[in-house]
Length: 402
Image (tube, rainbow, N blue to C red; front, side, top):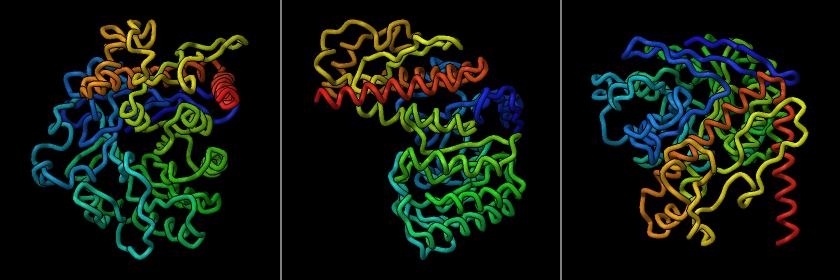
């Protein structure tokens, strides 16, 4: 794996980079421009997008997939997966990159049990299991991902200081164990945890930065902390992480959360936000447009419940023959209408989720493209401010009218 920063924002830590991953099956290089979105998967594929539909998503932005080893604990034997050749050959996705993390992001909070000292406790398809570093590394070795994060003891924001310190100590020990046991060629991303404690996150970042890792996986977010708490937690660790290595975070999904992460210097994000939108029957609708440096008239659309999305289950769309977003080039918008998807949702047809997932993924990948363009043009801070302010003003106005 190679990573290089190509551009920085005028202020702050936002940056554009290029991530190069070697493809183990085709001996080619996959290049992804960052900040980038990794498509969250269940057992290696997005929940509602089959392999034949993946090419309809923007390329190569959609070629980086995130999966959890926990999803493969039932069914296929690890030795069988290894003999097949890992995830790339198993799924037939030879031109895609895989990132594996020790978390099922679609599930809720991690286990808080402080008595399990030899491994991490996870809720898996096989029930709650204790995963030891040796077992975790056997999974990684069988899956052969392009990059993988080390085992981490993630805790919610409300745990005690003692439990938080224990989680960092445990994560650092597992990091050393995973590195020592590693036999795969994938790039190692050292896990950084620390809950809601600035001091513990700094300590963890300092220690992980001393290890021989290719990048950093920032865990423990999306577990009960507020957005106001998150900013100092992200800033606290960035000074300790080398600029030439990529940073990867889970738990930041909302558009304003992504912007907050990009501003702090994060390069890679997961996309479970898209899954939850699709399950709820929502379609992303906020405009994707470049912002000129002196554009004082930039405003977000006032469509939808929070100006970023619309609820296709609403009766107002029953006879609406327009696409989800005018001008959108995704397969869904080019071929179907709001009325049709409203009908599919109301009769509980799975095709509704397929079409929504295609659009939402296409749209959010476009959002990341706009972010990269704004950084290159020196207007990222303006874009972030306009986006957050417009949404906040809309929500405030909605609360007054309700």
